[in-house]
Image (cartoon, rainbow, N blue to C red; front, side):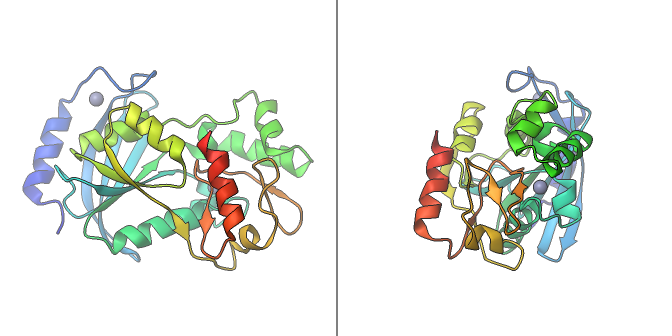
Length: 255
Ligand SMILES: [Zn+2]
Ligand SMILES: [Zn+2]
């Protein structure tokens, strides 16, 4: 099952003239601009490119099956991380989080990965690399971002909410370990029927989450004692992670 050619045409036609009051404080409005098949190593998907009125950014939805008018569609919201997603950086775990969501949804009948172009927790690539540079010189992650004049977290989910509305999804099951994400999307009018915990199998790259004291005031520390930025709003839960650690992670995210 995929989005049929007729439905693709319909969506593109409707979106060509789409205007609305916008979502969230920034009055974000996105339009579906293009749709195509996307066979991947994780399964056969289709990809939907969105144009956003606020930031001129091109967001993407990777969809499995015909998700229009569907209920309880499994959805993962991923924020772009060039260094992690594409280059396999170990300063964060973004690539694991992205790949595991594609793998999981690739096996499902229906599902969506929303890929939001909010690099480096919304501060952009250059500023993220500047923050990395400061960390290399001993700043901690929060201080590094603050030194650059940014709030600790600039991410925003109104784009995600509008994308789901554009795709005519009726309700979703959110793949997340972060209850705050549920609150925010709900506030923007998305009906969430269930939370699916996002659990990542252990591998050589995420070993440090498993085998070290994973947290120091919410930061991830690797074997070398280096801190890593958490770029996704979800703290990862990795299979075999001991229970107390998982509980701590969820408590930190609950507030
Ligand atoms: Zn709109
Ligand atoms: Zn990352």
